[in-house]
Image (cartoon, rainbow, N blue to C red; front, side):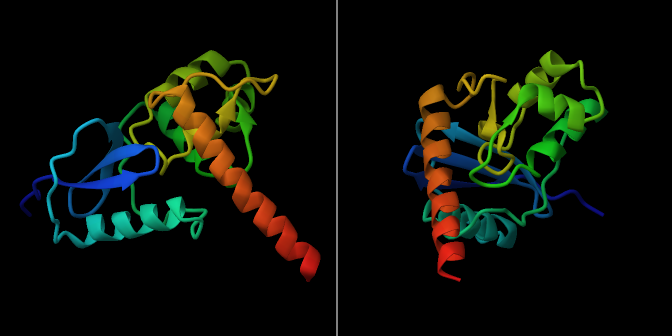
Amino acid sequence: MTKKLNQTAYYKSPIGWLKIDGDGNEIVAVNFVTKPRIRVTKDPLLQRALIEIHEYFNGKRERFTLKLRFTGTSFQQKVWSKLCKINCGDKASYRTIAALAGRPQAFRAAANAISRNRMAVLVPCHRVVASGGAISGYSGGVWRKKWLLEHEAKFKLRKARGAQRS
């Protein structure tokens, strides 16, 4: 079987351009970039990614269903998979993520793994905060992390209002 060359798509979000890389089967990276190289992609996976990311930024999606390729150590992969379990609108501490990944004392190693996340927005490392709740460290910039947390707080508020009506 021949390996498919990576494909790239770009999405203009409210907090900057996202570059989405895929190999036809899996998303391999999502990163913020300053200058996109606009391309129209016919790749079904990237088209699906663009739709899901658009839905997220428009308040219509809380979880992503895309197949992701994690490249890292087994501990990093455990950390990244635990990030995906943090509900939209919720936050977790680095210590909590370390414990969920099976190494409760390794919160610095968990923070390091989180900083190496190559799937901005899709793997929600922006939902991780310091134990005291302080917002710090985000490869896309702390201002983006704050924006994403505020955006997701709206999901939670809307959901709570919907539950009150029921």
